[in-house]
Image 1 (cartoon, helix red, strand yellow):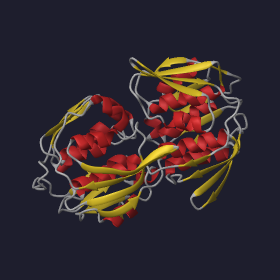
Image 2 (tube, rainbow, N blue to C red):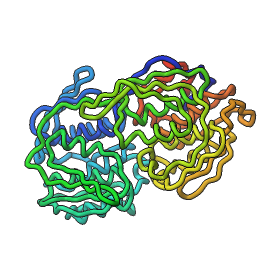
Image 3 (spheres, rainbow, N blue to C red):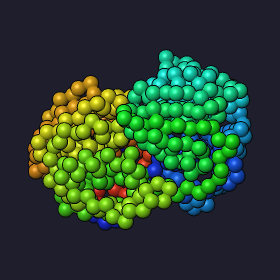
Image 4 (cartoon, helix red, strand yellow):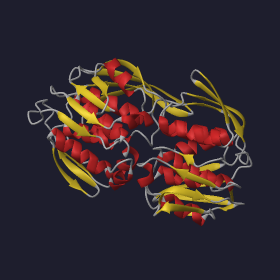
Length: 444
């Protein structure tokens, strides 16, 4: 499917974004390993999270769904059953990396596969530390999926320095450490998403976080059990980012986004936007399990910035939206230390370079980032005559491009947008609700 995009009106009103994808994955995993019944509210019914849920169903976990509530009948740490076939995780990098940590400690073998995009993503970053813990895990494809995981009697604890800033690698080790002997210590120089640490504490896992001179140490002992609990998932900040972007760059916008997750390891984009001059008010803050708040966003005259490299690890998923904001700003914007973008669902640096080129934006590409010369935010895009924008089957490229094209008088097509359903299945519904003009067109 493709997105057909026409010029949108100023985005206005009040919306609620579906549940956080990262938290939804972890809620299913921890609830499945807990003893007894856990309840999950606000679970994201996107394809990635459903792949995680189906994987645990294939391993004997029973789920009951009633409106916005999922009841998970946990099997305990050692109650998973051997799957009867390969576990297909579709497009979900989070699923395959975190699940590898869990399956590395099981008394049965398993094979993890995915779609074409997932099958091109690097897995040595988890294979190395899991192997050091004693896991029998290997790739059939030069460090890429499929992954074959052999049965295990016991894993060893590990002291591990994360070589890259990756919450998925950190979380894979922590999930494996649920089954290891002794204390595991994971050291990170740059703070990454801490949803796993918060979730583990909710389920009673003995875990502590120590600040050090050069980062953080996450220390963990394997628990005897995970206790059942209730999880209320806030709206996904990464999904909210597209509508924050729309409200900032489309004239006459005034939008309120309710119940957005405000985890401090996720909202670096807000810091970046505010430095650019964005008018964003954070109201009704609460802290229950994960912090959340409402965001009031208005059209703003943005200016280019040199993005603080310390922010990059915690806005890596939002960088496509940030690049669009930079293109619509006055002056130039520089982004560095973002080479991890090349290892996502697509090479997001090259993909966004193609998008910006199609829009007529002047930029310079580097191995780890780009410089973007903005349109001066005056909404005169005379060089853009409409046409086709390639999303490379990447949901975040597709949605960022659709928001950008909503500024133009000319009609645009954003191609290959099926994977938007992996993270934000209600994107088009909410876009229509706020005044954007984005519709589906079947590809020929």
